[in-house]
Length: 367
Length: 254
Image (cartoon, rainbow over all chains, first blue to last red; front, side, top):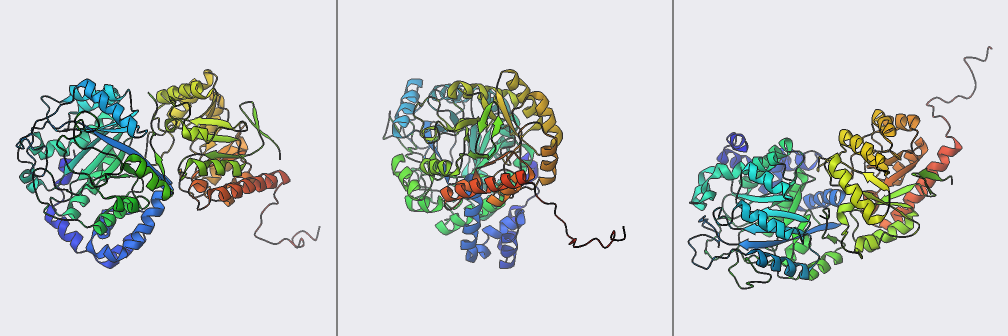
């Protein structure tokens, strides 16, 4: 399990190591064709900032070679905001007083239809709050069955499940699982996730091993930028990715770097990452792992998304609503976070085409 | 040029094309036309079988082109057989390019599952073109299993690194009774020409054309290189030598 592996890395020591990287370390990393974790630390360090253009060039070249001039398109569907956690930064925090929604089967179906009206989406990300009592594995399975009538490629972003449940859902047609560790800082984790199932750091962390063991086709990872020192967090996540790749080699991986945006809870980010830093991070991941999917959501602005699209990113959402029922039933319900890119999928498609990129809607077998 | 026969169909062009990674379906269509290809492979998973007017498919279909559906994305023989059956039903063709890669990262083919699927699909009447490692023994085993051609890789897929497996490819070409199509890794027209000079029956190219600055022109360049390579093979290349042999100093006494 990765929790044992992680014990070998001291948070403060890694933080210091990243800070100690020099421009010579960066140059060495840029001249290598196969990077290790030390090279990665150099590329995300402040010492690499003057090398941003060179990193962009390499990142673009590697992405083009592996993924071509295409962009994989997906859309999230929130089916419940019911949650037993009290994460201090999240709008779904159980202490926030608002009417919780758990979409009923016919409502999920209406959402599917409404999404299909927007664009020919085929990759659907089903998102829930974390309430295993009223919206647990059997509810998720039911949602998958409904959505599978409209979408061929289904991914879930839900509470960490048991290996048995991941296997059960995979056999029911699930393709991918997205789960954000949020932060790899074991000491601080509980300050942000004080109660509920999510307060259990190890259960969440080892969820990725359970997904791999269950044969999940694709695993999406992420840290929430805004909690702890981001450079240390993304390095820990890189270690996690390298660890998973060796053990669960039949699985595809994607990484996400959500930057915290204001939510209902009013929590202010502890650290702020600039656009330049996010770009640097994306390039560094591409240079470390030429094959990993890098996803960028509508949290980011149209300006940033359009420009980063050809430099390392391989997957994008468009037209997203981050509240349950947002496409049809309750277009005004409370959202988990507010989106920055409010363009329609057609507008995003047009922007991609203008840049010489083909949006790929369908990339999985018909059922 | 001499015709190539695979699965009972004759091909004038020995350049096969892949359809991934293009910046638009329109650009792909132009590249297909410029290449003069008659065999185009497409991933089953990219095509919406429920959509009679699938945009990608619309840009490929053409009476002079044999569609070669591929099973990219499947992880074992069982999934491959299912995908092949879907393809036959959807496109009304027995041709199938078998791609079984349980490792989604390097997309390297699984020889064990590929052999199994080839046996099953051949028995079901498919014309199977398996994408495989440049493994001469595996090629002979696939021949026995009923494959219509073999498609050994020149280098890891998408790398554009050329014929890194050339020593094995030479053995495969020498030993094979089936057409040998070099697939994957061909990154420049010179690589394609080299494969053809070696005696490969055809080459399959995708990334090198799709991500070129001008895919249409690159497709043309590949077409010319494949033709030149084939002609050179048919003409019989002279043997290479490091020493100049002007006279016969060692044997002039004879």
